[in-house]
Amino acid sequence: MTVQQAVRLGAMTGERYVDSLRDGREVWLDGQRVDDVTTHPAFREMVRALADVYDKQNAEYRDEMTYVDPESGVRTSLSWLIARSAADSQRKRRNSQLWNLLTWGQLGRSPDVLAPFIVNLMNRRAAFGAASHPRCDFAENIAGYYRFCRDNDVFLTHALGDPQVDRSQQPQNERRQVPEDEEIALHVVEETDDGVVVSGGKQLSTAAVFSNETYVSLSQTFYARNDPRFVLAFSIASNSPGLQILAREPVGRWFGSWGHPFQMLDEQDCMLFFHRVLVPWDRVFFLYEAPARVMASSGPSGAELNFAGWANLERALFRFRLLTAVATLVAEAIGVIEFREVASKLGEMVANCEMLRLTMDGIEHSSRTTAGMPGQGPVAVWMAQTTWRMTELLREICGSGIVMQPSENDLANPEIRPSLERFMRGKDVDVEYKSRLFRVAHDLAMSSFAMRQDIYEYWHAGDPSRNRINLLRAYDQSDITERIKDMCSRPLPHGEVP
Ligand SMILES: Cc1cc2nc3c(=O)[nH]c(=O)nc-3n(C[C@H](O)[C@H](O)[C@H](O)COP(=O)(O)OP(=O)(O)OC[C@H]3O[C@@H](n4cnc5c(N)ncnc54)[C@H](O)[C@@H]3O)c2cc1C
Image (cartoon, rainbow, N blue to C red; front, side):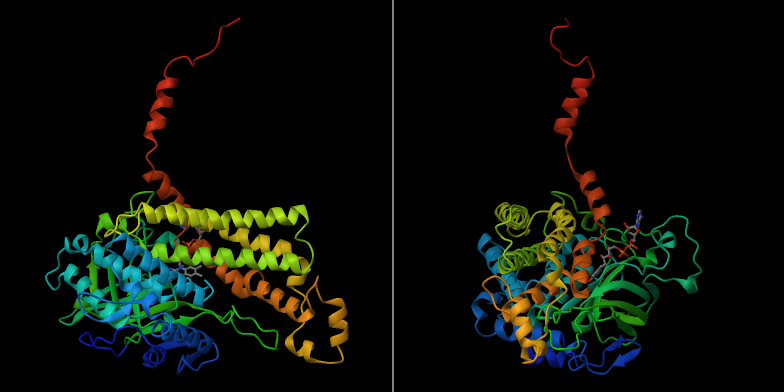
């Protein structure tokens, strides 16, 4: 991004956002370097969708999506607000709801979900500042970076994991044997007067193509390294020299005239390759030593604050409600909603929606204000376990209609139209409405876009197995286990022996 630290442009606008992506970034797709992501057919719909939200946050939703920051006096997105009261948290939640309303809850890594990563850093900067380095003060770096992002409403991507090359030879494994010049994971190559030079790969980085800045850190799986060269967190511009962004096969490209509104919201997932990339000293957040208290905070009550998780749950709730609404309309459109089994499946979907909503209300009411929301680890685990069930239920209710619908060109052709009207209409609905409704279901539960969304939901909070294990380790159940131990230390109570 070409924005300078001293510049304060405030809430992002659509035009400014599109311009910011024309910055010479090195994006690769299908063996070709992409000149301009804003015009390339694989990316332009997504750029347009984001620009549209940015415009709306400056117009009809200005009061609900932006605020004037008391420190800088700049009007910017509420995603950057550090909540200091329950009312602040509610404003942030409303902003998240609008982001999801405007993008149909399909963007796992929207600007609203990524901004809180930096907000969280800001809140925890004292823990980062506890580690020292002769060239920089990590707490000061975080504060400066937060202000830069807030005052320019920067869109971030983040990358926390190592490439999936050989998980048995990773920097956190004790008996690894990798020659220095074959290191895969991102690591420090050298220190210079200007900053630290890094090389290596990161897997994955959702929305990297569309981001202004790239935030790099370590997830819980990766932070406990045996070699300090691999312990680092920083943020750099997404067009930094030496940073290659490899985009995956798009899931939003379609030929023909069927029309698929959600598939156009392909946020992309990318590999990042760093080739001797310079990270300026004021962009480094930890180096050689991860702040253990911060990295290890998980579990039912461990996380001090987690607005990133919160914005993400708001998105997940919208997505669950969308899946349920489409399933309900499909069941009505083919006359199966009165069938007991179908109604029961819809009821299961409603139960999942309400479970999530009630949990979020509970979290909001028990949150510590300045410290944000309490731990959401259990909800993330439940989400990962439940998401596939939701799409499975939608598929089950759709039957074969999810695969077999006419296109807009079929509908417009007078020769075939009479057959479509007769054989492909629904119960009390015409063939146009019915086919479009099923195509929406196709987007959500059958397409490669749908499968990517499901895979995203399962993995995005980290390996669910690891998260479950972390939950268990942090879960204090001694009040019951001690009673059981005590009960079992003597013969169990029983009635009269006859
Ligand atoms: C669509 C999508 C988007 C994503 N976006 C982002 C992003 O924006 N930023 C980001 O940082 N990350 C992102 N991720 C990465 C995500 O956090 C990881 O997928 C997740 O942490 C799992 O790591 P992995 O994919 O490397 O799988 P691996 O760790 O390679 O796991 C492969 C298999 O091995 C098992 N396994 C691995 N290690 C062990 C072990 N030690 N013991 C036992 N079993 C093990 C796993 O359970 C799994 O079955 C994204 C992932 C997906 C799928």
